[in-house]
Length: 435
Image: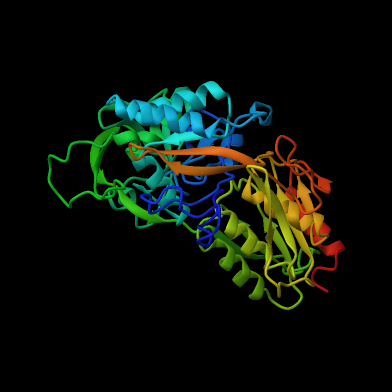
């Protein structure tokens, strides 16, 4: 996840890279490129991540065109971060020689073995920043692998380009811009749909001028429905995702107390305040279920704001940046009285783990589910000479009690398999939810 810009004197501001206008700051999320390598978890912009991984279903972006994958094993996390000076020096030498600075930097990062450090082209990083705003560029479809390697449309976004063109769930996707996709990893299909790495089709048909983020560029799909085969050209659009969904469960008829189920998919911009609004809107006697399953992280400032909905001030987490210690603190005035249960699983990571660990350590919530992923490192971005961005590990974060999460994850108070939500509601009733 990424923290927003800090104050002018903050080590997490943009002073290190003044030419970059959308630098999110230090991050603790899974690098999007790892998902495209077939790695293991829900990504923040490519969401950066997890229910889909568990079922073999991957999404083509956001809730629609974001990647869902599984992230690398925590054991692959590098014991020693890559040397920032070596990365920047390699990029500088390459630029002077007229070569690609990003490729030279990426080679140094690759040799270091630091799993969480990564190098992005300028356009890739702009896409990352766009996703942190809760938006993505795509055509509004989800895709998953069907029988014999076929790629099938799992769903379409209402009002999106795909729905307007008549694409529907169950249609088979045979090709993207002339590339046959049957048998390809779903992550590669997602990249083709999104037009990542500059793979935009020629705009021979005219139309609106494409934006720098790819919105307005065409993508040609070859589809099959039953015996019918047809081709359609869509234009990618900037689509906005909903990071927080609220559902009322348990009206008393099932023997369980009423509760507000708050599902947080990712910590994009504004998510923390939407969580606070959901808590304030909870009805009389309703307990709270905070569902962080499959949440791959996002902006750390948003996770702290979300923590403020349940805490009355105090430490949310501590982190180190090149040996300097810092603390993240909740705002005062949160709801500390309603019973709270937090749902987690192996797809809960980084910013989501930070929130779950804080609520657990502070005694504010019972955590139910399975052990979380274990992403506890912090990355700092900096601009390279050719405009690309190196996001390199600078330290680790810990829970309020000082627990290291990296490679260990958050162990739930109640480990469950199967119907975790049902068990969580039972626990909530035992805490006095509905009283």
